[in-house]
Image 1: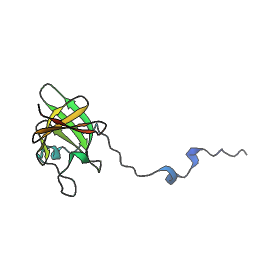
Image 2: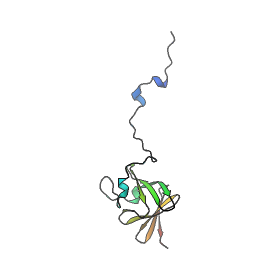
Image 3: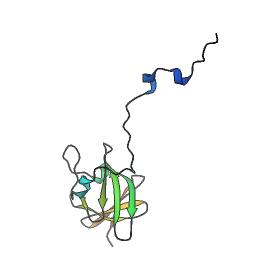
Length: 121
């Protein structure tokens, strides 16, 4: 009798199977946190723009939004005019960047996670 060739299907199930959490940025999640005006990390500290990554933007005729991920991978969305923390307010969303206002300067974060400061003219 001919022996069956060992294929990847014959390998032990637990050799490749792992519980890996999947994150789909296109599936709406719990939006309750987006109603807060100041966002906090799991440890209770106010979030800083340096700890965030811009992961998406959406603009319409009347409303604009920017979606960010924190260092734990948790995502949240801010609408223009919402405050992140410490007086840092989202004031604009462009095709490739989100613009915050803090006191007398603008702080811009782009999809490459580069952060720039600009004076308000």
